[in-house]
Every structure is written in structure tokens, then in C-alpha cells.
Image 1 (spheres, rainbow, N blue to C red):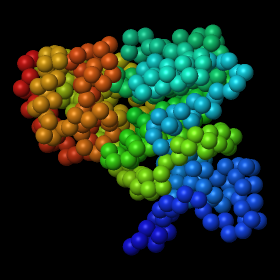
Image 2: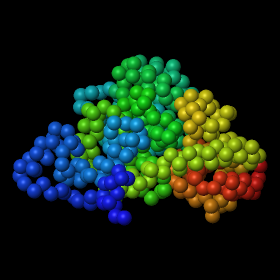
Image 3: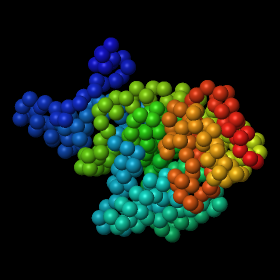
Image 4: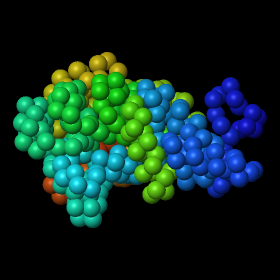
Length: 386
């Protein structure tokens, strides 16, 4: 069956047009007027502005997010740029407050683009140990009076669970916008917009697509004026997702709940096995009772799971990591990303910087058959001196 003959699946065909036929000057005038009034409200004109395939995929993402709208971008970083850029205005010198434990690419973007290129004020809110203090956060809000707060409810790679509901509520009481990167938790575990967040961003490269073969990002929200701002900024900078990737993302979204549930189950089993092994010094997984923010994770995620990332430290340090990576290499690849259907890993200090333990590995758990995956990991651990 051709893609164009699937209306029952809610998918648009792949429209690869750069520009769309308007047929007459009058039709063109109507289309341009509608676009000026509100982006994507009229007939499609030019794919950098809007594309029917992308729009159909955006509707599918919005259903998953539980949002009124979503906007697809060419990468997760493009989505972050969209969400933060619309909170920067000439003459408004209020700072942005960003939690320090966010994706390294976000930190580098903030330093290189927001601060150095645009002259924005960016302040970092840091944890106390491996937990965030909501009272200290409220004091910081009162001192800084920022325009917006940006955070991840489940941080990467330390897997700190932020008291996200309290953060949103505290910011809301002060008229501060909240932007949440929900890539690690996904809407399967938590929907920030239901709790009053203003915008949610995700790297669709990760769990939304889930197979390591698509790069994309999404911004989602409920406020129509924020949608207007996001769509206008996307149109100007030209970072809309391609029609082909939008179509594939829509098909891959259909299996997200099944995939991610299986990944969470596998991750929970692996975390428990790692915690019991003498070669392992420490396991960071919010589903484990000994995790510093386990209570926050239970409060935020309930019984839906605790994510599909496990970070652990080997007693043998870097040499132990080298042996572990080699031992699992035929089954678990070394890939510097996460969220794929197959399990992959990365050495934390190499990827994130020397401030992290040399014996630390971040394992992105896939939805493979769980027993054989556990056996591969256990065999590798047994080969490492305790």
C-alpha cells in the first residue's frame, strides 16, 4: 500500500516540495496573508515555513505530549535554541536561570551562543551534592528575578531527579516561565505541560524515534502566542525538520510506549544486578532505594518507571572500564548518544569531562531480550577485578 493510501493511520504522504503551487495571484495573496496573520494557518507556501507532512507529524507528537501544539526542528539543539531564543528580547535584561546538571551540549550552547554571541545573562543553579534544594531555588528566584528557568527533570549523566513540580510551581508564582527538556523521562513517565510548564523540548533523536537513525527535535506547548513565536523563529532561522524525517518520526512514535516500557524494565533489572556485584562501586539509577533522589523520582514518575539509563562506577577505574567495554563489545556498542533500541554505552569522563569519575560508564539500555542482556553484563563484570 502506498503512503498516500493510509488515511486510516492518520499519516500524510511525504511532500518533498520546496514550494507549493498557488495557481493564481489571488490564491497567493490569501496564502501570504494567512501566513502573516499566524504561521501555518493557511495553505502551504514554502517548506521552510510549513510542510503538510511535518504538520501531520507535529499533530502526532502533540497527542503523545498531551499538548495543544508542537513544532518539529532539525535537531534537539535546534529545539532548545527555539525555546530559549523566544525568551530573549532587546531591552529585557532579565537573566535566564539554567540548572547546571543539563546536557553538555546545552551548557556549551548557553556559553558560546547565549552569552558570548548574544550577550545574554545566564545564571546556573547548582545541586547540593547530588540533589537540588527547592528552598535554595526559591531564594535564587527572588534574588535574580529571571525571565525563564530551564531544567531537565532527570539529569544526564548523574540521573538526579529534580523536584520538578515544586520548581514549576515556585516559578509560576513569580511569573517566571519554565522550559523543560524532557528527553530522558519522555512523556511516558511525565508530562510537564500537565503540571503548568510553559514549554517542553525533546531531542526526537532519542526515545521519540528510538532507533538511532533519525535526528530531530521538538518544542511543545499549550499557549498559542508561544506557538506563534516558535514558528516565526523557526521560519526565520530555517531549522524545520525535513518531510522524510517527519514521516519516519510519526511511524516510530507509534511504538514509543511499548519500546520505552521494555527499556525501563530492562534498566531496572540491570541496575539491581550492578548494585549487587563486587566489581561495582556505585550505581546511579533513580529506581534504586539508595539513590539520593529516589523519593523525588517516585513522587514524579509514580509506578510508570524510572528511565532507561543506568550510570555506574567500577572499582577498577579506567582500566576496569576498558575491560568492560571490550568484554561487552559484540553485544553493546560504544556510541556517544542514548535512546536507541539496542543497548549502547559511553565512558562518562571521556564524553562529559574530567570532573567525572574515571571508572564511570553510562549505559543506555535497549529493549532487547532481558535475560541475555543481563548475562552479557554479568559475564563482563565477572572478568573485572573487584
